[in-house]
Length: 429
Image 1 (cartoon, rainbow, N blue to C red):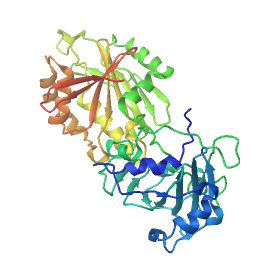
Image 2: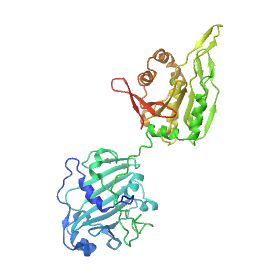
Image 3: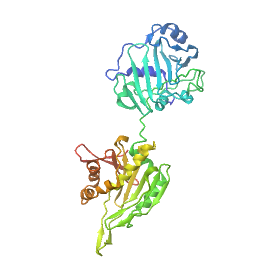
């Protein structure tokens, strides 16, 4: 049976696979007889002889913990005393039958560890900190070090390339190992945090074995899927779908706290139909209509057909970029920012996948300056989606804005341009 509490004894084994080239190192184990009878005594008096990498460290043998996984596997963890509040170190020893392997773990944070950090698993500590974590085998040549930035990105700075924890560069280290339950030292079920209260000297919990699955909750497809599962979002979408036959735009803005506000104050004249939205400083998203074509009498008394472009306008995109700029300044996730356009022929959403440095804002004069080239590009276009994406890149100089064609019930399709500038579609999972 698999459990969330993972067997740290396996950590020594799977991390022996760290080399991306061959995953082979010189021997990392010492074979002895009867070590299970008194593992700590043997480790302290015999195994640690000549282990120069721990020379000078204050190993707290009296705080050692022993965990029996089954009749043949034993794990021993021993904290190392540190006078620095941003460093956690621990020795772990795996005994499998008569083979012993030892490992030194070190977490070094750019800031101090908090009291609650000592109740976390190793990967939970990693996900919270900025700094470095290192792992050294006490025998053989295997070592591994990762740089951590706000728990989000972990780059190998040793020999295994770079990438996030879930990237292929880390797979050889962590592998696809089944999770195993370790009974607590006193029996009675799997172990939880090894430190309910921080000891005099912080010690790390037992390192977990399997890297957590990639966190995809911030990708646009997942965000849109989440929206579709919310009643208030669907109510707003249905309301706007019923108003595409009106002669002026309507819409909703959504604040960062989740509150929606309805807007129907569009200005309309012979050549524009523009909804006025609030200051974007605390707005995280907006939804609005582009209305159906309709007949109207112009200023000269002539009846004309008002034909709107059923795609985001430069002004729509400009407001979207303003929302991104304010979200960045306020420390809010850029992945939460969105814009929706609803028409009787279909609905679209734009999301941002670029970096903070790629955010580009525009003045009102600049937005007006795009009008003629936008109309020229989009009027009579055979592919509004493709032309819109090309306009963003080539005319507005914007990168990192993704377009999504949405069905209220059913799939969402991401539309991109390939390297040749041709539209490329892929359905969201």
